[in-house]
Length: 203
Image 1: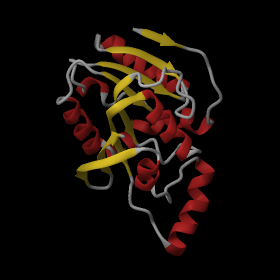
Image 2 (image 1 turned 45 degrees about the horizontal axis):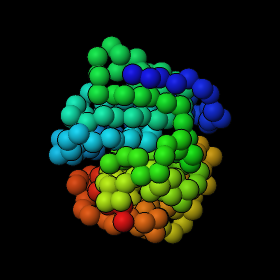
Image 3 (image 1 turned 90 degrees about the vertical axis):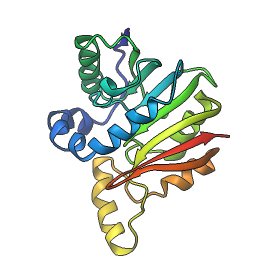
């Protein structure tokens, strides 16, 4: 397993959020993490990219019949995930790299599938992130997204957006429309609770 430690600019908030991650995001996202893991059970012999691995809460549930390459833009998250992969001898985790979703350092049409769990509401440029994912996916490849897909509307949306943008969260987005406009076809909703897990195909 190759863990690259080259540092890139990142939001200090996400490094700080590391300390409460297990009691906030990980709890809220437990069901969607399991849905994502279950979907990987349908894949075999694939090269899979996870964009925004966080602290690696899904990696122990992945189907080991695939090779996984993980990225995140938070150095402390990368370290936590690398430690977990080594401690649990997860040989199917092939690389863990400090990298931005806006600038994926992979060749075009390199991956069979991409996992993007709770990331597209925090990237500052949604269209750029979708474009990069589209570029590195093979034609017909699968994009598995867990996100808050329902846009809040009206005055509550304006008030919430004004606060969350300061923290690097962009909840008032039509994420599905951006993904479809970026060259994907929406296949199906795999689960829906507080978050949705949706499967897309690269066209």
